[in-house]
Amino acid sequence: MNISQEKSSTMATEGDPRSLLTIAFEASSLGLIICAAVIGNTLILASLYRFTCLHTKTNAFVLNLAIADLLLAILAMPFTLVSSIKYEWIFGHAMCQILGVLNSVFCEASIMTLTFVSLERFIAIVYPLKYETLITPNRVKFVIGYIWLQAVLCASSTFIFAKFTFLKFESICTVDWGSNIAYTLVFVIVFLYVPFLVTAVLYYVILQTAMKQRRRIEVIKVGEITTSESGSQRSAKNGVNSAKKTAKENKATVMIAIVVGTFVICWFPHAIGVFCLLDPKCNFSDHFYVLTTWFAMLNSAMNSLIYGLMNRSFRRAFKSLLCCERYVGNADLVTNILPEKSGRKSYGNETSYFSKNLNIQLASGKKG
Image 1: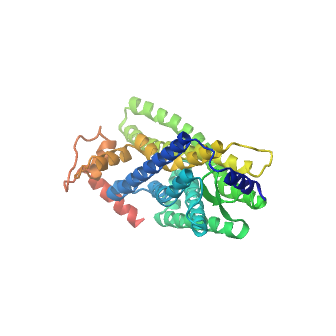
Image 2: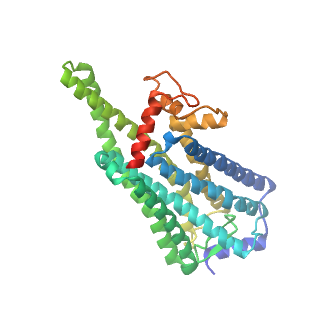
Image 3: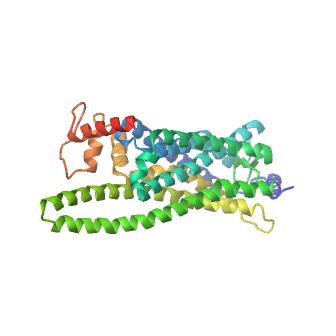
């Protein structure tokens, strides 16, 4: 009998040792996580659907991440909530297998999405002149399709090399990590630690490049003030425009970095718990496994909070949706980003300078 099975069977004979207060706290906290994940990710999807100015290549990965998080919150988390209250699996063996697959697919899709969005940010910051050539809409679609294919293959491999089972101490149907130690090691390293390592290396290079670009921007700003000749002024103006674009890319990169960092913080303790199940000498308490599982699920609700706090476009879109501002359009989000260039706002079918430029950019993007 493997370690996880022994832990589950021991607890099955003991019944539910938790106090009523502990059950209420675990259930209410997971319930709040589910509500936050559903509301937050629905806001992201609604914002991307309503405001076409948010249709960027980076946000295509944001869309994919929101879909994975929303599906996890709707299709998988409620079963974990019920199991946490009942302290047993009451939905049958077949449903446990289905939920095990769903948990694996959605979690792997999130991990791979964050890895590829890190690669997209790496190209945008380190190789900006090659970005439009390397990151095309068709390639973005291909990558997103590959992400879901790998997620399905990752979950399917469990039926061949291991099995899905209900872990009572986590209240979740997932991979029986102790049934095949070799598979567990390969699974965790290939599908969890390698993507995290790749992401960490990419963001280290991005950070080094961003620091150099920041120093260059400061030099350009000084040149903008001291330049007097007309030819030099044009050169300085072009440099300032390039600097503003670089600053915008850097800000988007910082936001994605926080998203990735939050994911690592939420999931790393859970990964430690998986390795603990392989070591007979490791005896983490049941509270540790509940905490790490809940913490991993909390990540599904964090992304929308990060976008709302850090991205003015998403923040304005969220406000428009929550306050039922029917006539807020793309121009409002753009003028909200660049208030110093125009005090006008556009409602309904009225078109502003920024919305015209936006339509041109979207048209050129579709052609590309």
